[in-house]
Length: 223
Length: 216
Image 1 (cartoon, each protein chain N blue to C red):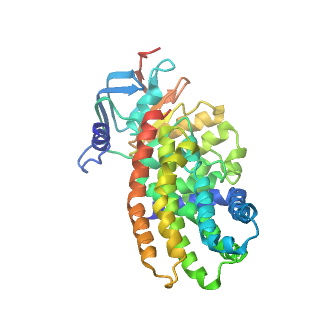
Image 2: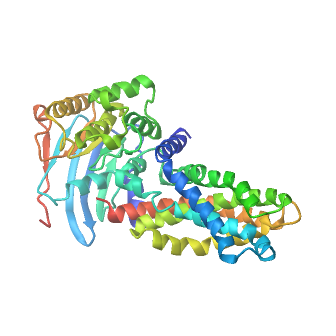
Image 3: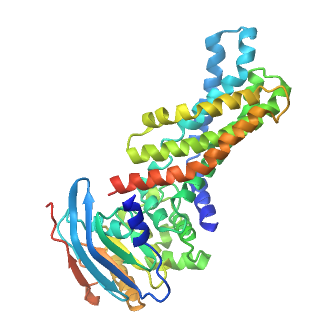
């Protein structure tokens, strides 16, 4: 397990040195949320039911927007070569990448969410289900993003392709996530369980898919 | 799928009775649709230093990357039972963090010694201590290369070193250090395979493997 945590530690050190990126991501999140009321107009009966979906769409876009460089830098630096020869292996490497990316992008977003919920006038009793669903949903989106980034790296295409591949796959997370967030039966709703099931599936699949995508990409395009 | 299987078998860890050899049998490698290496056979045993020579595009880097398992072989077989240390064109260093953090992270993901003294000794092998705490992005090409080569000091004694133009951007003093380290490694029972155009470990009288170049 030591190599695994060493990879997370390395990514967190790098993220800390590039911490201005985190600010950009958070501002992006806030701006998307702020744009919706501006476009829809000051009509409380229309705006109130839109609070939770708006937060979800903003979170989805903000999380997925940060993914295009996830593996590119490591490939260019030659770090991926070192990983492939190490004890870590590409699968664990991809999982370590997902965890460090969630810690530096998903978690700050989650911390911002209560503020956004206040701004959108989401009733207080709705906050716990929203936060729990967004916690699981952001982790699931991160795993999806890891798959997309690895595939884009292999295909040498970049962000546009990644968005095309990943956004349709994000639909189940979005549907179950928004339903679970708006549940009036407390935190543990059937929708939350389905959201958890999607997350569990992604947790099992994402490292494997990302590892084979990175392997193929590297063997076809390496120096 | 066959490529994948091949790689798995090629890089298997041999039983403890196996001696420290690198065996390459009838190796062919394709890049794109071009055959870069055709039916190459090569053997190296503990203590051997071998220089890989040949014109640009002859497949020197391709051969090293294939042995490292980063490229699939189109045919043939590679067997190597010892740990492989690869120092390629790209140094494997992140520009955002310091050389010391890079080296310590590398040692950790490989399970090599990571104590403060081990890292310090490795850093001083190429006299990198003075700039090891600076972010790598501010360093020169040669300084980065020295940090990448400092990994060699942490490698196990029996490991196979694959060095791709190791002395390309090094100054004379560092080149001499590299020659020294390579010779010591060979004396201790390690193997070195280096692609180079420059004078490399001449005192140790390295063997030479010439790639004629099929597409040049």
